[in-house]
Amino acid sequence: MVKRITVIFLISLLLIYPLNNLLNTSAKSNNENYILRGFSYGFYKIINNRKATCTSITSQGEETTIFCKSDYEISKTVTSLSYLYILVNSEEYNTIFTILRNGSVDTSYIPENNIIPSSFTANDDYIFFISNDESYTISIKRNTLETTTSFFSEKVKKLFCYNEKVYAITASSLYRLDNPNIPIKCDIPSFNDLEPVFYDNIFIDANGKVYSFSFDNGFKYIKTLNYKKVFILNDIYYGVSENHINKLSENSSITSRYSFSENIDDIAVNGNKIALLSSENVKLITEKDFKPIENSSTESSNPISKPSFDGFTDYENDDNYIIVPQGTTIAILKKHINSAKNSSLIFYDNKKRKISSGNLGTGFSLEYYENSFLKYKYTIIVMGDITGEGSVNTYDKRRLTDYLLGKLELTSAQKYAANLDANNLIDSIDLLLLNRLILQ
Picture 1: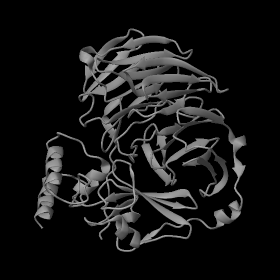
Picture 2: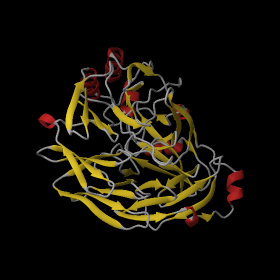
Picture 3: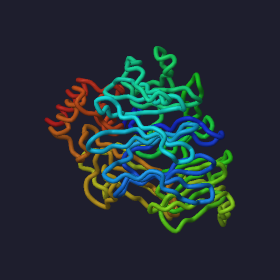
Picture 4: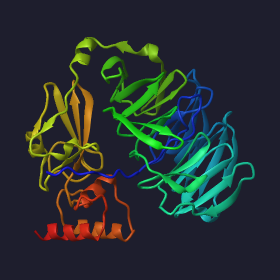
């Protein structure tokens, strides 16, 4: 099969604004429970179950509820040097609350006509957000909407703030708000649903890909670490796998490990503390809590090799896709995978539910474990299957038509499946090719 070059499209959020040369400000969404870096080496815990709650956690582990609303939902949080901003949604309106370092609620802003921000960022002076392709600026001190204008020729996906400069990301470029007419051509990370982080000038996306970031050149890809969550503490990489945190050497082998009693839902770092979120509870640990791995020298000298695939050749590209024909089942794909001893395979459908049988569709995923540790993750693609049903039919044609008309957005996996002529541009030619597939 001819190798394909995939354009990575942003589908989630960036973190913002560095503090103490460690972790940038945080931005989260998607109604999940999560934890983020706070002030004075503390943390914030966001819980969206039953009530929208924000809890302040000191570096000693003491918790104080600073925000709690019934029938509300915290959709995003952003931290600047002095404030925590919380975007809250309800059936009636949307509000951005400004919370000071001491936990008191200082101001809130309800956008005119109940505008819903699709992405927002902030520093100590302004809130910047995008809504319906318009860019808005709110003055924190005057609590007023100062400007409403479109800055860019391309549709802005996300905003973030780094070293007091505001950046905007489109599908293919990076822009600075202070120079919006000149795009910065650079590598564009993929964010998905996991929280991205900045450590000084290092950014790690939700796929474990590591990028450097500079004022003039934007993102530059460095390497990939095959963990669902990756963070940096004292210039050392750590990878999270289920209920373990692995301390990694320069060649990514495991040198020591912290084992937790439950699966780890989220991680944040501040100062020398690591905060683990599990089942809505937070535990703080440090490097001293890690234990050396037995036979770590053996593990380091025998690095894990990728599983090999007999018959499915696109798995090697940088985006870790496996291209399979429609009608491929889990059992069929397993027969084509030559895995190492003590390895296991776990499949998920496109709603992130674990599955063990049935047809594979676009957006399904495969996780490859060795000795109970996640080593590689692949996304399944069935060319032409945009709906993720595992077959190509008129529903896919309808979905692609709506996308071309601007009625809906596609995920990066769906865009890969729709790009049938492999030219990194989804257009009417792909629709024609899709129609031919349906008629075959």
